[in-house]
Length: 82
Image 1: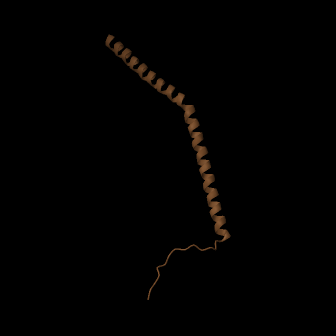
Image 2: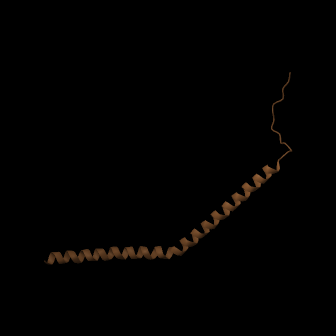
Image 3: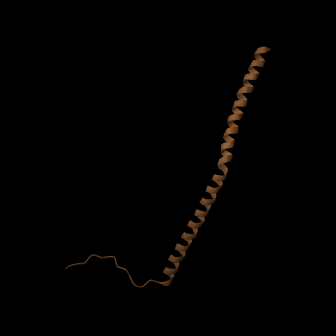
């Protein structure tokens, strides 16, 4: 008694519903990827536009800390002269 192992095989009968479902899933995936790409592009353009603002903000913060240090020195001199 010889037995043949069960092998995978393709069935030639594919329903129209399966084809439609796969096509809809593929279309949905492509639409999602397109929207994600558009959002990424928009965020990159916003980031590029904000780069000079971030640089100016860093300069202002540094100037504010230098001004604070000067003010502290002036206050210390005034306290010593009293």
